[in-house]
Figure 1 (cartoon, one colour):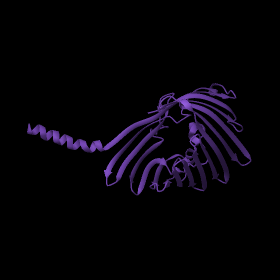
Figure 2 (spheres, helix red, strand yellow):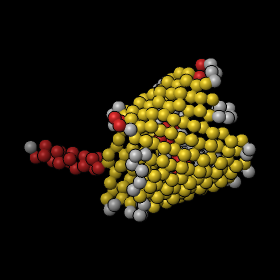
Figure 3 (tube, helix red, strand yellow):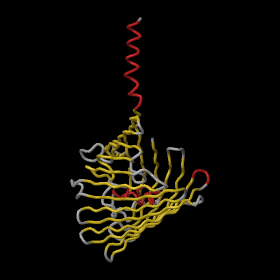
Figure 4 (tube, rainbow, N blue to C red):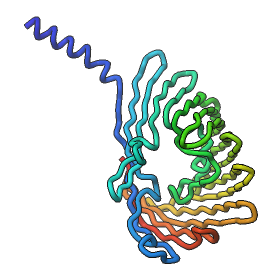
Length: 302
């Protein structure tokens, strides 16, 4: 009997630390049907994955180290839900593979991750209310970069700063990145700057939730090899009864004397807390992508 009690006590003692760490599997599945014009053959219509929201699957975990310190990790890979492929090439966790130590001092993150919040200014400004349709590309240097170290300050009076460095790799030149964001009540503000080799990338954005609607604006400039790209985007999201919402965005991209405008309108219906039905129409006026796009699909998070 004593041996059994001792065995139970040892088993309990060794199981307690394991309970301190919480790991979660999460993800997004996005599937839709798309039709584009002009008609360019098979690619002009069909099933697409990850255009309203990038399909992904990931694992995240957190452990309380005591003394106000926590350790956490994130492993996340993109998913092509149409064929079941995960990751990119040989990188299973192509979107995120990082470890973070956090406390009263802020947080230090290492691995494959964002260099700073500079590449998320469009999201802060509401550009992502359409998911990937309204993302502003061509301003930030990169999204998730390998060999990155990032420091995130505590949020004080709504302000938070980030500074990061990514080493030179196949993804690009050595990059230093800085960002400052502010969030208080209905107002969000952000500014970020990336220095990658001889190239510079700068973006600013703002968003305000009026209650009956939310509106945002962002502007960015990319100076790469002496060639400037200027982007300006505005967006709006209007909640409607019965879980419906109306979305709108307008973006211009100017490279030299060439200016391209993209207009996007759409509607969404929340079927549950995790599943949303979306429909979108997009028009691009110039360039190789000139034409229209119509799409309807479902996004589910877990």
